Image (cartoon, rainbow, N blue to C red; front, top):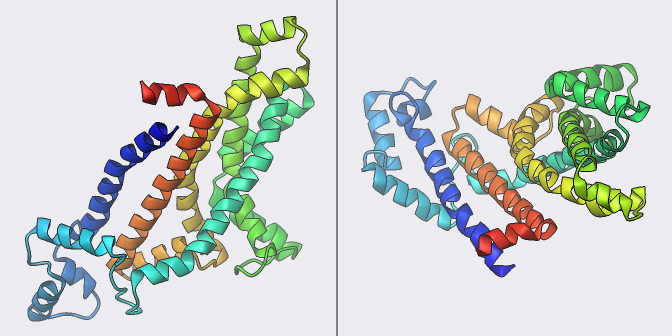
Length: 310
């Protein structure tokens, strides 16, 4: 197991390096001078632009700038916000809990809704429960989460007044954004589990288990669901990045002070250090979560660990 963990960490290192390169290059991919973009709106003179380039080290060779950037990252320095003058790391850390809570709640909605419906649809295809499961999957895939968020706000916040329309105070303010964001992923989970279980129930080893007298619950839990869990866990890990991206839109709609809304406002204000830091922060979080998913898959399916060891 230790070798398997080490191998997965080793694979994550090049990805992490790639993310640092992408976040570093954001400032250099802006058309024209990055300093000109930073001073946008103040009608800077050429001398002011040149002074800022010297101050930020933008006149140095690119490899030296990247080395300085990585050295600062190793010391936890993500730069300083152009708008507030505060450290980017502290500002991101103050907003990260709100985004992670929303993403976690959306993932919980996906699991609580998607797994039961997927099991019902996979165990009894064509039943009433399967029709409901297919409705959930079709509606979740067909309806964009931002449109669903607006409909939820209109019905449950404006008309019925069951939940607040904006803000992040208490559990009630989390319900609508979490369901709006998580419903689409619940649909994907439902379809995946349903199709995998139908496939598993037609396999030879399930027929053999039934021939030996194994009951329906035992066949489901010990055989079919265990094998269906491997692609399900993998899919959940891959969806984390999509949920973090979707959280940006949902946070803007519901006025939640998270990473997403902060990133959107920073892009509008051309607050480049914050954009760089947010991209890096989300990328590292994505790598960490996928590393955990790989380890879970290794625990569920020992064949994964053996393939790495080989």
